[in-house]
Amino acid sequence: MKNSLGLNKSPQETTVCVAMSGGVDSSVTAYLLQKEGYKVFGLTMDLLQPPYAPAVSSVADAAVVAAQLEIEHHFINLQTEFATKVVQYFSDEYMSGQTPSPCIMCNKYVKLGILAEHARRLGADILVTGHYARTLPSPHGVELHRGKDDIRDQSYFLFAVDKNNLQMLRCPLSEYNKAQTREIAEKAGLKIAKKSDSQDICFVSEGKYAELIRKLNPDYKELSGDIVTTDGKILGRHKGLINYTVGQRRGLGIGGGDILYVLSLDAVRNRVIVGSKTQLAQKEVFVTNVNWLAEEHSDKMELEVKLRSRQKLVPATVFFEDNNTARLELRDEFLGIAPGQGCCFYQGTRVMGGGFISKK
Image 1: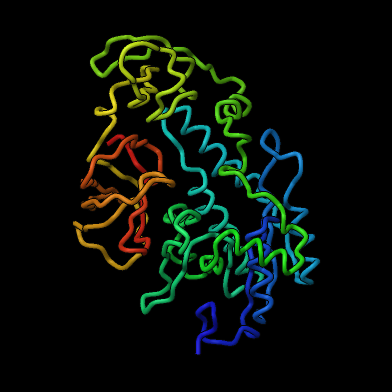
Image 2: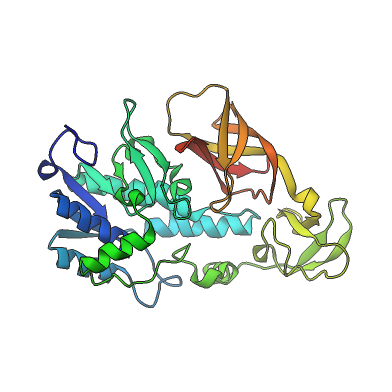
């Protein structure tokens, strides 16, 4: 008989590492598994440092909860790895005219990369996180699925994880919505029960991307350049490429006339290219660095794809090509496809894999 985490042994024989961030989700996860009888220990990453360290760190909150639950607790300092694999990547992508996906990279290299390996060394059978996504056992191994609460679903951010590390991952909170999770925390008397949710990108304060990039790169020359149409007509001047993103229509400083959107960012010529809503729409997408989590795929598959984390799924024909690349033909036009963003492949609720959108 399998236990609730899908292993062929009792909870008392199963060692579970909970990635404890100090937030409500991971704290409730640790509480629930301990209540089921699993041998639980916490592992907390120290990731943030100046100039993107918060005034109050959540690392201390994780220690408070671990002490309250009376479970073993470990810290791991990954500030250097996080700075290199996530923050610098984020900065470099923006400066090159791309729209980065830092949470996807963090899950791939840090949370479900380095942290997973450290959990194994500490004797864990399973790594549990507070992600709102489902991990389901199958004859082929662990499958990744969307969470039951579509609003909270975070499966999109997990498509790039190593397939071997996916076998170790479990996400028990997929069965709950946020209100239920908070209710559990309050009934359990957890000291972080009323703590507010974390922001979308943990190292960016109030969405001030450009401000952080300037701090990280004091020698960066934020050069003004032309705002142009697709046929090269100059409409105005931009304030530096890092201040713009594909799909943006406000703050362009070229008032009057038709409503225009950012179609693309030309880092080589330092230009912002704008056009109509019709020009923003695309049906063909190119994807690189494809990470396939399912069984073998055919050269052509009918799937659904998510091109931004908060956008709906789009039916697409996916043509897999050489060098882990793919070309997608969308059934319907999609507005604001941004190079650098993640593209997650779904079949029903299952995450089949994904890659990163490229210009071509």
